[in-house]
Image 1 (cartoon, rainbow, N blue to C red):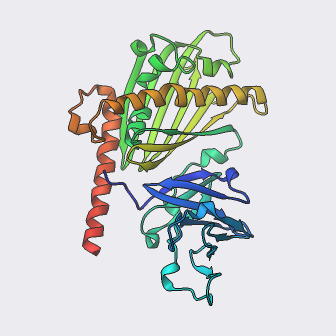
Image 2 (cartoon, rainbow, N blue to C red):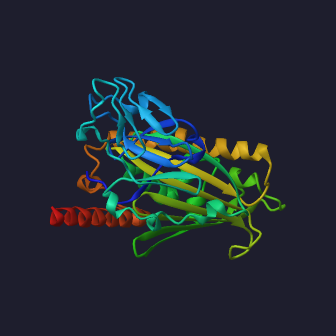
Image 3 (cartoon, rainbow, N blue to C red):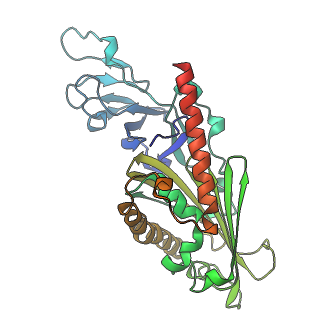
Length: 345
């Protein structure tokens, strides 16, 4: 299945890349990330053009990568700047593909397609990550399945009651209302469960004496792979300003047809500076994704003959609407991009 290439994909949390090199894979491409002496980011195809040794296995010094096989040196643009062999001649074929790279919201992003079309204005808008009203914990994991299955899972939160005891209580589906909305290419799945027992997640932040409240969750998807979830609990009919809120961002990178790199950030508007709550929030969130969602998504894929969901003629429920809309939008965007590429060829 093809990918949407002309888009920004999350590569790694910026805090992980200081004075070192970092190997990743995006849309089947191996990529090596590094900074130069002044902190400027670079991303190169992770293979020396001489004998294809991974450059990430080489040596990094002041923004220059030296291949660990024969010592050829490359700068951040992918230009070979030193050949230690013979008379030091540098053939044109020694160039390495470079990728546009950006840093925003504490994340490093890579443009996977045509470099001439890279535009930082097309980065996802996630200003909540810089909102001082929230404290954040960060995490990541690998999912052994196609990224669209992960998007399906996130847009259909009806599974939470049955798989995530930390995030919901039993019987919530009976009291849950659901709506799917689309605004251009952005799809939202909106849930509200009335008279829900205070969940384990919100017990970390709850300050009232009530044992039940209204749980609200709004999952929003931006193509190709960005999702942000706004959750809150409160006793009023609408969301009150002082209700405890737990926004969670989900940033996905297709590694290949059978793998997804999953970055997440969970915030809270209460208990700032409480390290114990930070640890519990991190554990609960990571555990839900890594030990509850991932095994199920992987098991689902094991019963599918391909990653083409619609080819399997699935029985659809009303709560699948948001996921179906997202799949159709993504398919159209990929088709449009492929057509443009063919017209330019």
